[in-house]
Length: 124
Image (cartoon, rainbow, N blue to C red; front, side, top):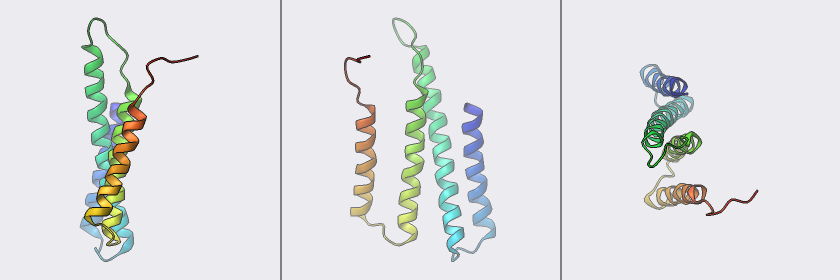
């Protein structure tokens, strides 16, 4: 899993570097590729970091080890990548302001809060 996340981050960085080096910034496709590359790179790096930290925390849990929650770590990394993509696309169409950025960020924070909260007792 770590190798796939690292590969995704490197592919996003390569896409971003290739687009910046070879394309005209006035081209709409170039802006879309640059935003996609940056989002993929951020998502890969953040998910890789989150998975690593989750596995380390699971191994050091007291009084006994627990299973690492890799799905939660992947969701957070992909969420950050999506946030970068949304903010980048809003900036590309000149629709990014402090108000829109605040609402977008609040939506992602609220979504993470709802998805992270668990009921104290599971049924079934």
